[in-house]
Image (tube, rainbow, N blue to C red):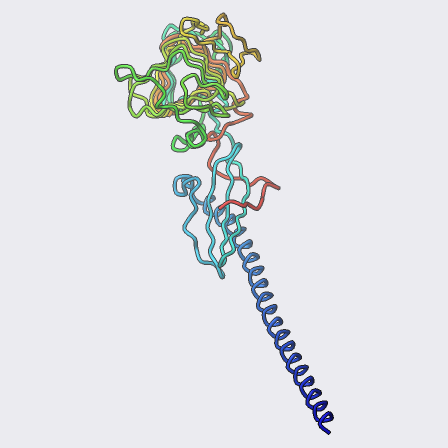
Length: 415
């Protein structure tokens, strides 16, 4: 009898344990199901946030293009590289920014929803190249040609104002375009044309933006001699900077004069030299050779006024100064060497841009020299047009209108 009771108790205990275990298992399954549901819900929520953030990012690009299309000063009103204040839209926010790239700009739309951020971008070109790039020499206010001097080289000379000169001769056929008036009479080899609409010029407020952003500031490495910056016996190229401070892969070097005069002589620039705010007596007054390292780029840019009196004496290596202008990293005619016996033409190739006034004395240009103010040639001048400057127009030398580039959109991973 006792054994029977023990068996019954053991059976009831086993059933209880089984029921308890089953209940725990059911409970665990239920808890797991709830957890999985919550995880799934969060996952669905995250996916929805990402999808909405993506849509907002695309809307950001469209918003930017709409704003830029109705604002001719958009480059000022929306500073490069700075995102706009986020605007609430849907369950998140949208903003945009832009940055200069080779051949135009890239516009970024930024969409945020909770913890999800998506960035979408598209490349756009800045309208047509400036019409000034079609001229060998351009003056925004006026051009004064040398009295009793000669103009050689050939090409088109254009002024959005007047053109003056007395007994100037032209060695080859040259076209003269002027908007208001000219004092030049009937001259051999000169075709005069009065234009009815001003030629488009680079935006002087933004033409320097790309170069100051992407260039290397070497101001502190330029010797200051008795209050004047002296750039002498120097070589600047993408792979060589004899002044020190590093190199720039595009050969863009920036000197901020801050009102101090700068004198440049016996220097070769195989790249782009940018002079900001030079003093009123700043000059290039010795043998130099300027040529861009990137096709179509300017070789010299001046924010302010400048005098170019380089003359015609060839630039030459100088062993006494220890300067070889075609050393490794700076080929001339595709050749480098370790000697001090090479000579180089004294001239400016590519684009020369001056935002203020330019006074040129016996200067030689191959490409296009563009002056926003007055362009005065005091002695004979050689200007030969090179269409490369227009065909491969450089950043800053386009109109402000934007045209998107097909198949250039992409999702970005940056902030």
